Image (cartoon, rainbow, N blue to C red; front, top):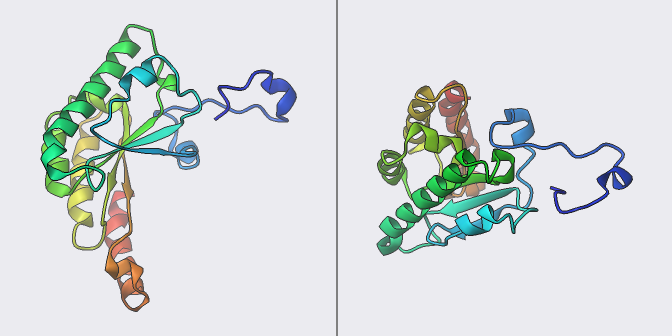
Length: 192
């Protein structure tokens, strides 16, 4: 969080530690900070490459409600371009993985999630920290988690995380919340 601050030794009793998308889950679950949420049509690759966002620790590139459905293909191409640009900079040593914010992709729905990930190489997942699942409830949770699990089965010693967004009426309304959350717990436990 404090890359932009000089003289950290005089400010902190315990110095901040570095983290990146390969840090252990116990670190990452507290590392998001103030997340930049943006439409996936926006090009952020250049700002990451020139390190102009040094205090940015996480970002979400959204395929869902921040773009129109007619923009989806353009958005998917932009995200792939961003991932490949960052990956190339890391290979060329002009960027380190610690310079890259934690990148989450908010998918539109399960079909778009599956279709989009068909366009990614295993090495592309080294740049992505996780996927965000909108309107996550007991009607779609298992499909999201099964596909995420199949992705993780293909990776070499690291994983991609899922971040469910609980925003459906079943969860928001007190009358149905307890049952919906209990159903979700049952579905999610095998994928912990």
